[in-house]
Image 1 (cartoon, one colour):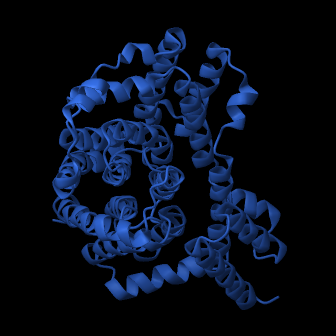
Image 2 (image 1 turned 60 degrees about the horizontal axis):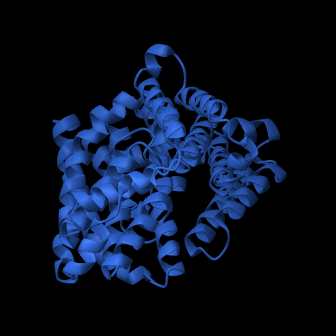
Image 3 (image 1 turned 60 degrees about the vertical axis):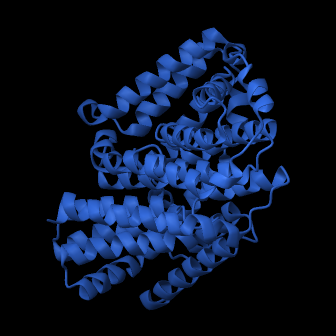
Length: 426
């Protein structure tokens, strides 16, 4: 076949996969893998190119952090944290919603946000059940906090893992450039949610006393394993901070920590590995291959030249376009496939126009990660949270989610716009 035919095929497959992911009627991992296999079977990519397109650093980092979390979960440390949050807030609903949102955001900075939601949402549901409160405000604020907190670090949100791997940015880079705006933003948005739902945050005194009587120390199921887990987790984070000086990829450091924890915990590795979110892992593999297909046929190159033509190669206009387009697009398209497409586009823009692309990485990170808060399908954590709520009997519709979260998401993007301009463009 001619090059133009492969060009057209790659676009058709890519758009079809995106459309099916947005419709959300089919398993997105199966859809992404189906698209990847079509790229290979129709010879848009050969088998070697398909495997080379997968970012194994991102895959390794995700798997390693999942293993660490699965082991830590068995210690009861997350239940311990829940009781501590309740006692810190005096079981006052107004303070509790703020504390849960902030705690979720901080935890999400060191764990991926899907894992954080899987850990924190059952806590929020349990607490609201005991206090006879509507859990929906707590769910929405926790998800929002998770995505804001996850934006702050390299490992907090899958798009950041992808950006860091492809752009050569390390843990410290994200702390210096993203955390400086995301940390205050986490406090601001948590308070906004509390104000917004203030009238619903009312409970009875006897219910508060009952929940405050819980003993957090009884939550710890295995103190020895907890100490081992915390030591290994601390070493992994320290390794992330210095991985540039150590000349090891972040995935190598995380996988080393995961293997060490598996060894010292003496846990059944098969049991742990079976619990990993393999669906998410294979979804990533499919996406990387899809993006590799449109990159190989020159689609990314063409898009880069079009963006440069529209902005005239002006750094200010390019950064603003990436920030806002990323935010709006990521609200309606899962931010993982969107970022997978944008990364090679930015790299190509740097090659074509020779502009400084460093600010563009932070525009993409802030836009995509924070924009994912806009709708129920904008980020993986949102989808997981809505599903968990529905299983508990609380249906959160697309419109309900949009009406509350989209305006608050726009507030975070306006704040990010000011930050990007002041930090990189003046």
